[in-house]
Length: 186
Image 1 (cartoon, helix red, strand yellow):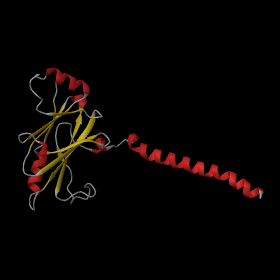
Image 2 (cartoon, one colour):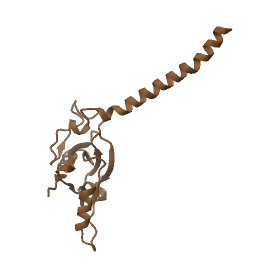
Image 3 (cartoon, rainbow, N blue to C red):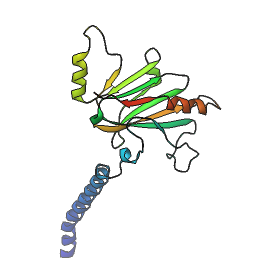
Image 4 (cartoon, helix red, strand yellow):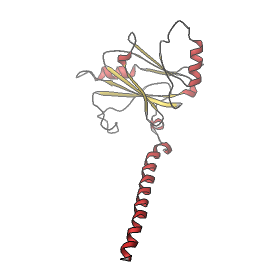
């Protein structure tokens, strides 16, 4: 009977240890992206000013589970170099943009269907740059561009152009290439 009683008192310690080990394991898995040296931003070989097409679905190094009708492109931003302008003149193909922080987390997304008079202008700025822009805005006129304040100073925009029909892949590639992504200096 004393052996059973000893095992009964050891059970809470064993369960507590397993619970603590589980918490440590889950926490370490969730914290890994913060300490990774090669995050999504570092892996992109895109210059700060410019748009680069990513490999298509037929390429072995493409993004897993990529839609074969989609053309992917990306541009990086670094607000230390100044506000970043993303401009697109809407066309026939559906174009989406997801704005991501350095680790790849989405903080904003939009489509070309949000274009005003066929033009989509988005300005990525930090809080200080936004204050300067707002101080110089005319009081009787609304800004003509969407102004976003990213959660991090560096990140990237993932651009996805969808081919709307068979043979429309070249139009989707042209749509992705026509996105302007450049730092505004000064």
